[in-house]
Length: 288
Image (cartoon, rainbow, N blue to C red):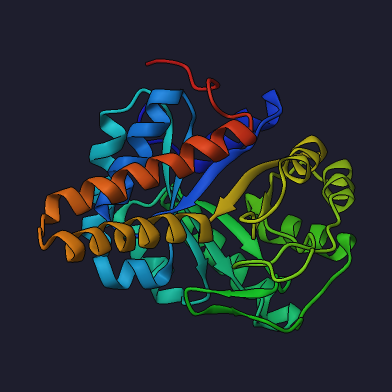
């Protein structure tokens, strides 16, 4: 069960009461590490790429790395474009073979968001690609996308209406979380997930997961969340492991790039291992 559609993974998670870890990778090294560890612990995984990562590493390189890692795995692996307001990048990732894309229309007014989301859905579905939709403003800036101030907020009824009309596959509503590191306790609204799920059968995605407690994650999953995004934790693990090793190199005056890669790989594996346990996805994937 290697490279699969994102929607298949989250629908399976809904059936069995867990959430799929969606980890924002930054390069082929982290792709290989995350998939290898997910395979070892038996957890499906979604590899997420930011717009910035696509532009810096290259779409062809990222897709090839994801497919190669997936082909070696027994667990389901999907490749997802995270938080993208740029229609040209969405088109690029659809053409290159991404499993799914998040069209972030939270900077548009409601009618523009509705129209453009429908256009993206039509384009993606023609290629067999899943669409995640965000029309509300989830606080925080992630890889240059987003805002620290609230701009658009809608009722559950409005979110469902737009989702129905556009035919989007997954929904990312505002749930009280924020992107980046929390500086104060967030005011979470997990009950909003149940409101949506009670009225419309659509997978709900939680953004801004890094920093929540295990109990908070479990409440969201119990309410129906089946995909949880983790970005900041991987960035911190990546950079801090590199920093620690480079300090050691400086102290000993021994410089080994391959050992640096090994440190980053180990740190990346620890991220997926930790969150797969919390999200109850470890052990959920079957063998091919």
